[in-house]
Amino acid sequence: MVLVLICLPGQEFPKMDDWSAWLEKIYFDKWVHAGIFGIMMILFAWPFKSADVKEEKKKSIYLLIAVLTCIWGLITECIQLYVPFRSFDLLDWAADSFGTIIALYAMRLFPTK
Image 1: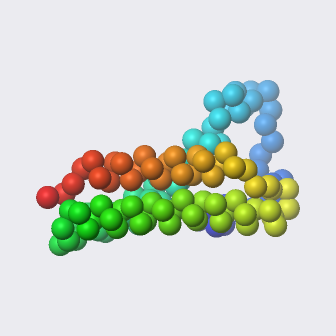
Image 2: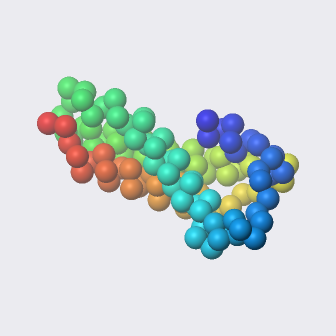
């Protein structure tokens, strides 16, 4: 899903009008990035929550998934360099990583056993 969204040309997204300009003021797109990547982190890590693995091993797995999710965020930003009307945005990657880190913390905060 993320790959499809980042490959959409920029003109495919709706233009901001006066009514929706407030979304820019609250950095809505960054919150969307954080949410999408946080959900992605949780979806990849969730199967390990109930696995018969020691808690320390689970923490290592969660950390690996988080690092790989952050790397995926950087790669998606690089891919956008080749998509018409899209560009690399370091703040988007920061938002991706922020969402991933919050999800990592949430996964580690609520152990299953």
